Length: 317
Image (cartoon, rainbow, N blue to C red; front, side):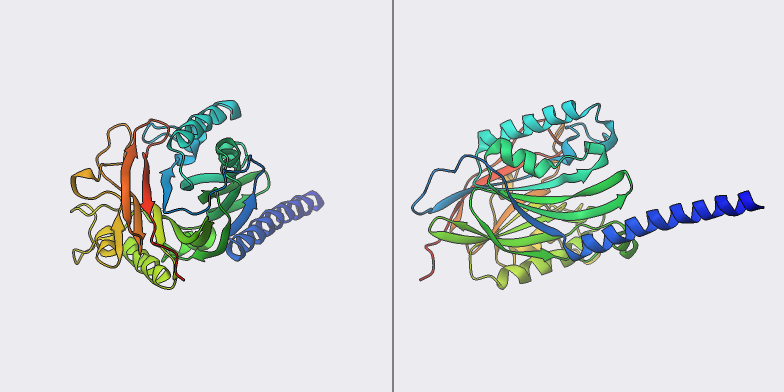
């Protein structure tokens, strides 16, 4: 009986240790879902004032590659993963956005060998300012899943706020995480603008529509031009409508936003092997317009990057 008591004690100790570890990190995740960091890179060329700014958004699928349905655990090695990230970095450098939103990016995750993909790409691509916003945060001893959205910027990031979107599943939200977003200001030369980064829920249009209303409210509360970018998981078509026929992108376009690409020019972005739906968007509110809106073809993710030049209004006096 003594050995049975000892085994029971050890098992209880292990359970409480793991449970305590998990609970502490879930509380920490909920308390501080946004982290601002800087990386050492060569200083960008000084600009007196900008009338246009280059922006882009890219769901990089954790760096697992472009084949649809591939598991995040299929990474052969850290070197193979870094090679895929280097390909993504080469594409980012070719597009050369001033501001870049990234979705499905790992900050400290076991399947990607625990290194911070946002800071890795920032160093590779020359972005000194990084915002990391965790959507998913689970930690156990020797096992971590921390990933979400990131903003890489050539210009200082300020006034960062977490945008809490309605969860499809309250249990998922409590015990692991959800599809949330952020809003922040970027102090570009001569003009400050607000950036919204999103990766909306992929399973339910009504949940996405509720999130769009939060985005609209957040944009209305800012006095600066607003650019909302990322994987909206919605296209204005019959495949993405609520029971009452409403649509997330259509709602935003009817309530103060314009799109970098519309109509026949709104090329599909998913899946990258055979694109069928445009679910990755760049939307602007109180901007003067978009130029050179485009979709970047590649097989580095199951999504395609979207990019555009934004015409900015003169700064308010």
